[in-house]
Image (tube, rainbow, N blue to C red; front, side, top):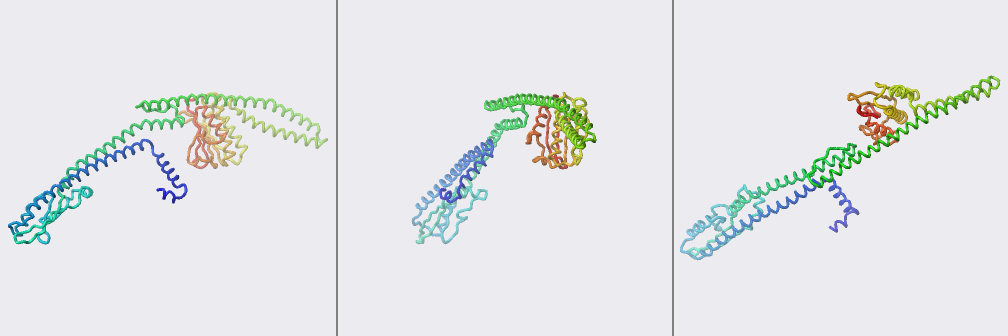
Length: 470
């Protein structure tokens, strides 16, 4: 082994060990236990089979030894000259030994034995059994002298065929019983192991559901104190995660509420302060432009340029205020606000075809529900127009058959990386915009999923259950 390891490429042993370790780690514990117990039981059964075969071999050998000793004694007793012809002596010997079990007799060079010597083993005995219990051939040679002085060579051979058949008939029920007991015991052991590990599989599935957000999965009944400890720990884990989620949602809700208040405050200050300042600057420039008239053309031109710059600032301020405080959302509801949002994007991106299907003016819930849904739609349209390279974008707001509110934004663009043919939670995607959408959906108790549009592009779907309220 050391020579092989020395001739192998560097690191070969370590790689083989790692592969073996990896293969073992992919086998679960219940399978390992079943295989280990099955292997141990197989070894015990092999030892039992070996014991039965050894007993059969000793039985055959003992019987053959006994009959061969008997034959040797008879030959030694009659191996002297007798008052009989050779033809008379041979039938006498054949008559004695041919009727003796496990022996066959023949006279060398003359008459053949009355049957095959030794006889063939019965076909019902398996070859492996014959090979295991058959001993080395035994034979006795004696010269019997007749009255005429002629010597007859007689060969007595061991013939274990009958004894082997008898040994097989005795061993077969034991071997069948051993095999039956082995299979039955192994089946009981495997069933017991898998049944004992069934609660562990259920606990593993419960942990997987907890990881997916189902904090109170069904738990199996504890059958041992160890399982009771594990189950109690999993239940406590779910309760702790539920408290943590509740606290996180409360903090997130508070953070988003503060964010919306700050946006409204900033929008109000911009509208009141910056808007008034721009209006005053525009009025002064208009007065300057009027007084200069045609007398000072250069001054008139500069006053006009100032007014154009102020108009551009007005447009930028209008767009900023629309993003900070959606126009008409509080006054008219979510439906008209989304219509204005789509029309605003259509005016800014004439190369894109915008479609809308808004079946609701307002959705159930407080003002924050309207604001959060608007923010999600706003971010989704921003991503589609800026990053998707889409030619068509559609927005739909409607109530599902179960009363849930569905907000769907679909584009035919290049799609998000990793969404081809899949549907994933928005929280699994990387990006501050998508993360903000997921946070608002979580605060509402809604589900937000990203999927591939069958025609190409991306589909963003938000479902707000009818029973939830913000």
